[in-house]
Image (cartoon, rainbow, N blue to C red):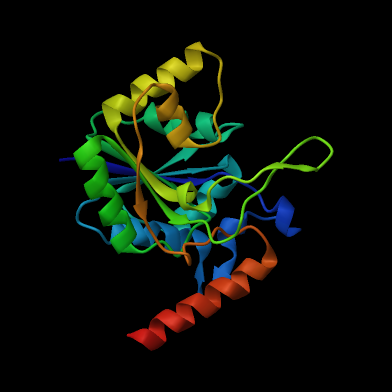
Length: 226
């Protein structure tokens, strides 16, 4: 079994009000990209890691995560295109593990549990039950419906797929000129079910400056529980 992890880190720091990549921000002494990559590189189940990033970040990223098993690929203009750029560099692979580089607190337990489910069904993603009541609104922001909270899941990453299945789903999406912001949706469009694995609420995505402080507090709590 040969498994390839694709870490998506081609975004910028615009929403955080910074000029450099948010992957270079530090959380308790390590950058976001270092923590995201280490979660996968420390696992024997992972054979190869591809970091998808901007061309201007390759030099700095490679300095921070100098590992022979890691290769760098330049990202595209959308998430789907970035993953496709990585897929085109993979010769042989059984399962592809797609992860947001901006989720540096993913646990190895979540990765392994999701990989196990994907090996059973071909496609799986980690997520958490929705805590809040969700409302559907119209164009005037009036509430028109309230879906059953028990049937809702907030999907995170990793999202893991049989590599052959994913390539076929990607080919179909490209032929239909569709560009998805979620890899599960891409595979769903191919007609294949994606199974969820209950993960962790602290698998947060670093989006705003306040997320850095939250991530540091989560790491502190984890260390206190050891």
